[in-house]
Image (cartoon, rainbow, N blue to C red; front, side):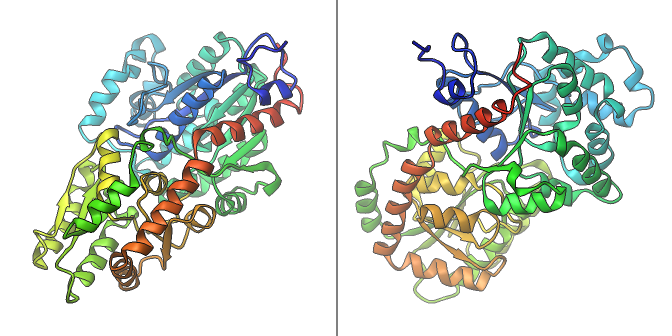
Length: 462
């Protein structure tokens, strides 16, 4: 009888029944900030581990930061300090690894990033291209160290990358390990579009070179499959579309009936913003819409509550937006709640009447929207990126034209004036997320991708 710890999808791929599926998942830290990709990778690793998969979540560049238990290994490869110095300091890459490996200590990288070291693409063009060139770039020594470590592990069935931008080592993995390679694309385009030329064009050429070596790509929406397929010339039949999911376990205790009773008794209605405080997340669009809304009569009871990670390089932008509210006489109508813990996040999303994050870019994920829906809070989102597919699948919200503060203000006003419509949207969204966007479905979909690539043969023999 097969071992019960072997996931059914892994067994279906023809793997030996006396061992679990072995996966190494390479994720990317984001210089100390909460990152949707890091959080999603961590959730996936925990879910796969619970399903019996032997998985190691391996950070690259910097340690990951997540608001749930960290599932990653306690080390960092392609450490941000080493790869940066290799690019910027002549001769650094020729130093013996024994003299520079201490720079990859997670505690040191965390300390460095705490001083505001950022991962803005506009400043990292040459480094991005060099890393994509892998063993032919300036970071060959660091690529070799990662490949040596991988080669010292029991050979994984699958090596899974969080994006293709860290895929410079894929040729070495295919040659030395023979493992199957899966890549999740979840924001590569945003980083690419921030690169100045000639680095953007060079990076795209390197990614096109690497793409044929990937056995399967995973995306969270049909929109993103078409977008990245077009950019990197990847046929659509090489994508698996796995809709975005979250861990809903700590949202289960929320009592919607109690929430609705409290809301009905409250003299206030609150618009919430929960995301990174940055221009691309559309904070300024929401503040413009809020000022327009508050200029209407009968809106004294409407409040704005803002929370999320604020990077040092965005403080001037955020202070400018807050000053706009103060200058409009709305200093008492908004609140910045800082950067909540996971427990505080659940409480925040339960305390607002609706969530609005009007991104100016076409967001390929939108974890904040799923989290709000899991709390029974309806969402108002721009009609681009992954959001139209998300709301078509789950309901629970309204779409508005992107970067249109006037229409956004009108939609917010309408929903805040109609408790029954708003509560119905929140209830429908919560039920749909719990049924169709939880980790059980994420696990099954990911294992199905692994099973498909392993069934192709060559790459799992030991």
